[in-house]
Image (cartoon, rainbow over the protein chains, first blue to last red):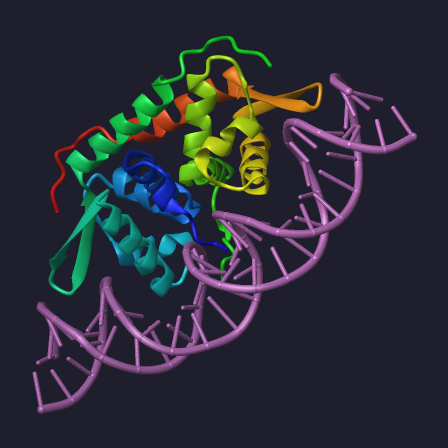
Length: 109
Length: 109
DNA sequence: TTTTATCATCGCTATATTGCAATATTAAAT
DNA sequence: ATTTAATATTGCAATATAGCGATGATAAAA
């Protein structure tokens, strides 16, 4: 139905999946990479490098912002976005521990 | 449109986003955790622990399998799934290096 | 060979997501 | 006060996804 039955999963599972989901779009990966690359926070306008309409970029930025991974500040009539240090590291370590749960058990099946 | 414009992104970006996307559903997270927990590969039937219909579980398993993260072998009339060691580690390191690209630059904006 | 058990696939419905043009909104600049 | 620039939001169309019942397919068991 396109409707995930999130009630039947743990909070942690839903949260982790939620993070992955936000990262699960090339435009959002590209946007994050741009923000990272240009040491300073960049204006969403510049992101038109990506070849997507302004509305589309803005939408993706909102999703990233909602997840907490990035934050934005107004400066004049432009908007500066940057990685949220704390959230980034938290997400990074949560994902790392998900992957670490599996210690190469040389499992075959 | 529900149609991602993947042509405008790099192969790497698309691939990484693809991995994240597969992991972006709590059922698939739960399935992977089950497979990991029960050291041996488990039968999808058992996954009915999750409270989803057999068809639904099977579908998620196919997606995980398509991504390469898990592999399955037939044994009698049941199906054994397990993590694919190599792919798992590859994915793990690709994701790790994505996150490492950002070295906490104490960036504020 | 008929059952039974275990999966995968099909077909369908309902919801979600992507993308964009058009339209607000806001603030600097004139 | 108007204009301009930069974003966000709204509304819409098209595609994608989640979920499930029903149906196939396959192999062990009876």
